[in-house]
Length: 304
Image (cartoon, rainbow, N blue to C red; front, top):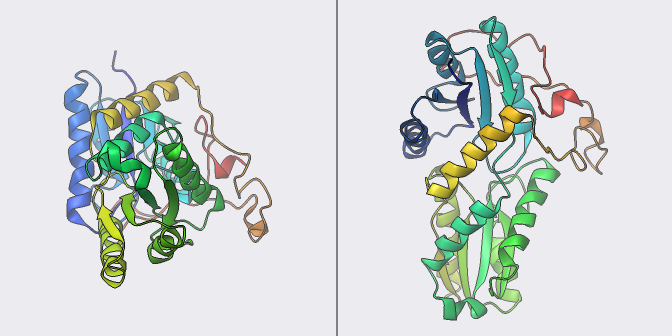
């Protein structure tokens, strides 16, 4: 009997290297898990679209899918766009069903990889005089931005760095230069800029460029740049952990500070807002979907 397929869902990027890193990771998981149908697609910007990944797996006889969002924080894409896109695929392929997992972070396995990226830039002896600027994607969702701040705190705990400050490369404050300003005002003379991204792409490149610009204007501060998380063994195992918990229905979505459920200051109009799937320009299957949404075993905004 064919087990439920692992369906990895990415946001997409205009950077071909970043898109290929996602596709290579999907192939890697398939090779590491023989007998398990594995596929992956994007909701926008990059091929293959999610619809193509589902069509290919359905053509192989797959009827049950466990969808794992390959994203670090639970922002609008994970809470609304992906569940809505899965609802659309359920309509396109009668007889299929979709269980929806939760985003990857924060998780101790990812903290281990982030620490490794820092170790590539500073020695153990340098930690006490090193401040880390953890730079996330940034979102209009306060809950998602708060998760990045949580990761910064968890990364600081017990590791001996002088401090770990959060910043964002888009849509949220503080931005990278402001984050570096804060580190300097707190007395930092060595800062490692740590991108909180899974793979390379336009936004991680922007983080690097902005950090380089700030460093050129502040030669008194030693600014070093760490790499993205990448397809590490810990990431692969974490995805499989998310797959297994999705099948069991053991999901612990955070709804306590979700703007689609709770009236957060400045976001009151988002409560109960219906979610629509992204229309992917590469998706020739047509339409934006009918707006009919399912709970998907832990789907977020639409079930509020």
